[in-house]
Image 1 (cartoon, protein in one colour):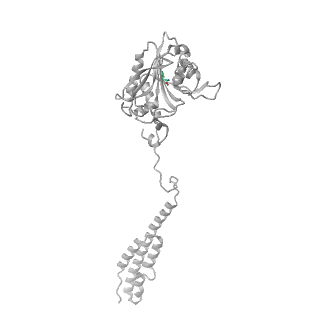
Image 2 (spheres, helix red, strand yellow):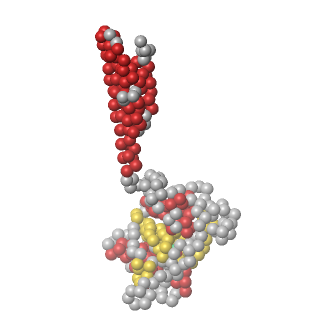
Image 3 (cartoon, protein in one colour):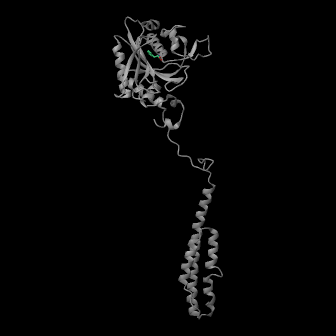
Length: 354
Ligand code: PHE
């Protein structure tokens, strides 16, 4: 009798060969090799006819069981490999709308946030609201009267040189303009208060301003100011100085020093400029502060009686103070931004820091 093939070995070998197949094509080949006409399994059945009936029946059953087992292995593997192949194909055909043309996947979109200047405006408003001020707003396009005339700056007044103005091609020449400061909102507010009999006034007025300036490390042609106005009985310069002191410590913290310096504005008397220590050089002097160690935040003073008279407020009964300073400058000093132009360049790597 020829050596009885070890049928268990045949099944074990087939199991290995089937498991090693990774494509449908390979499975087809393996299937022929392990269960086809020339397979060791088929060979093992060749001499069945030479066996006596008992032995033939026994071997026949074992061979059938082995073939069934091998065929099941092949079918299982075919299902596995088929599913994997389909998945690969689907992945290859997938249209990924988020892919760049070069095949790279963009980073997931980041959540945006308010621009630093907007955050700063909100924070400044909060500080003043906390001190009892209301928040008001006024138009960015103004007449010469609101931006200058009512503020005690008649046409051709030399002080107009303080504000390089963008005029609009609207109405009489130089009659309409982009406001150069938020001070015209003072005039609107006082007129409205008089008309509605709503004095006293304690308000701040934030907003965009425009000047025909060449941008540099601490100037922008379009910038933001926050104006303050208090009109009440018995208001003195000490109230103004105290307000500025409280605001600078609340917003900048105790480490930044501020100071008032005598100045001139046609609509306040006396007037002052207020400055904070330059946070870029900590007062040493640098390019940002033009080597002075100080950065001017804005102007302030006691409302000039001439302005009160213009808007119909009795200067013998009411006194008041006003201030106006740069919101962008505040952001710049608080966050130590050496060049203010960074605020309008829209470089996401810069904006993301705040
Ligand atoms: N409006 C002035 C400016 O922009 C600042 C200022 C406001 C001065 C209020 C005094 C009072 O230069």
